[in-house]
Amino acid sequence: MVFGLGPVVRYELLTTARRGRYYVARVAYALCLLFLLSNEFGSFSERLPGGGTAEQIREFAEATLIGFAGAQGAALLCLIPAFTAGVIADEHQRKTLHYLLASRLSSAEIVLGKLAARMLHIGTFIALGIPVVCLLALYGGLNPENVYYVYLGTCTMVVFVSGLSILISILARRPRDAILAAYGLEFLWLVVPNWIEPTSRYLDGGSLWWVAPFNDCVLLTNPAFVWGQATSQLFVFRSGALVPTSFWFLGQFQWFFYWMVGLQTGLGLLCMGLAVAGLRPLLGSTWPGGQPRTGWWTRVATKARAALSARAAGLLTRNQILVAPPERRPCGDDPMLWKERHTSLGGGLKWLGSRPMVLFFGVLLGCYLLDVSYPALVDLGSGKWGRTSESSVNAALRGTSTAVAVLLMLGVAASAAISITGEREQDTWVSLATTLLTPAEVIRAKQFGAVWSARWVGLALLVMWAVGILLGALHPLGVLAAAIDVAAIAWLIAAVGVFVSSRAKNSTRALVATFALFLIFSTISGWPTIVWVSLVSYRDVTAPWSQVVQVNAAAGRLTTVFATGPLVALYALVAAMLTLGSARRLRKTWGQ
Image (cartoon, rainbow, N blue to C red; front, side, top):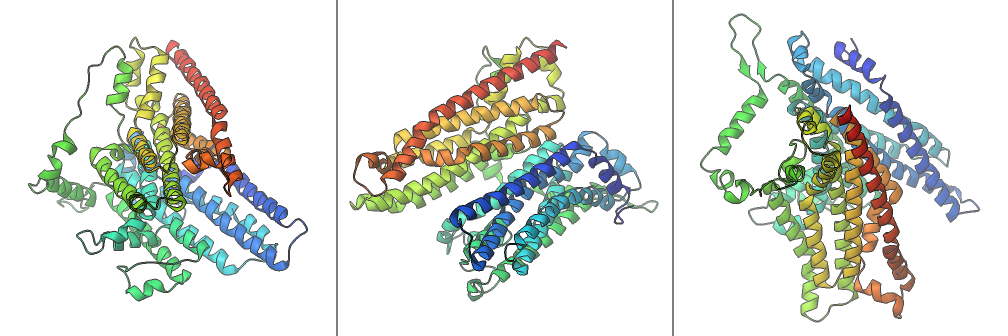
């Protein structure tokens, strides 16, 4: 028995400690931290080649600590769902969960034991950053309060994300579904509140008055928001739901930080408690003649089904726009391509592509574009269209397009990673192997299906670019360059995901490997920056041939746009090689 959690935690520690991927992840994480430290030191040496004063060295150490905190938090947010979201779902998929439930182990021993073992592995990643902090302390010392804030905020973030992941794990049937759902909810938690915060202030006074206070409460749990506020030292809030208005303008970092710590700890413990209570759907009485009573998840699901079948919900549940089945064309001469276009493996992030979610995000995108373009339209109508209006709209569309492009690539990577392993796990792979389909047709269709799954995100990109062209904030050549770059990268990521899926043993390993390769590729190639630079305006195109101030900067952006041609060709070449490798691997497997 370890930590009083029974034999489960001991078994998990013994089995997971022997897996080589944990050692690889630790080594890669430590090397990334050392690379961050060396990069910061290199920039400091270039800025002050002769050395700096004691105050400048102390500022360098503090700035590096801030960058280290951001890098450590981002790495943990990427690792925690992969480590914890599939622990219970994996037992369910391997059909061994009922053995655990039939034993004398309690639900707390099963859930908390597995979670504690994985959190110990996560703790090793936090411990790997301590030598980096000790090295920084040699550069003139660090403020102990800042180190305290970094590690306390990191620990509470780990508690919340781990609790949410283990709760998702008991509700999912497959590890890949749990991992994808955990990443999807984590993305919504980190990005959406920051995205809608500027526009939520316009909803005060109407039927949506609750959006702004609720969004402010969610922002208090958001480590990205609090970390950004800590680095900028700018704390501006509107009226909130937790305290009076005057307290929102205290301007004190401690107030925001401790609210975040308390909310994350409370919500994390709540998710762990719900996971323990919901592991067994039926809680039977131990004494003879006792009547079994349903668990909380069964009761919630029953009430949800009753609410959906009610007459008041008929406007949504029986609305033809939301629930009408899609029209499917005849199969034709390419059945595999038809299958990937009109069907999916389900689970994971499938709900993000449903019609209600598409309508919701479509309305949200429309409100955002209206908010961005309205001042520019006013200036254009009054004849005051100038450099300021063009620059503001161009900057907004550049940042949003880059974020949406990253979301598109994540969707493509997730769908490609489970393309072949999902067929094996659903026992449909043998049926495909016995057909007359060739390996090239299967691989091509799987890559197309991965890109097709993110078609709504791609449509959002096209809408934003069309608005930018109509407003004169984006040049058609820049949009064409960005579109070609995004298409080539999407094909490359789809090829990488299908290649990994053809060699992985299960979908969990394929997802982790694909996301790791995607992160490494994005860091090395910097393709989000290339997409951002490619979206040039008319002024950027005409600047090198006119007398303006920023000629060199505009010329540099145009050079980057024209230099994307060789990169696109390289991406296409690598994607074609991976496609041939996947087809060759499939041909050998089917031949055997």
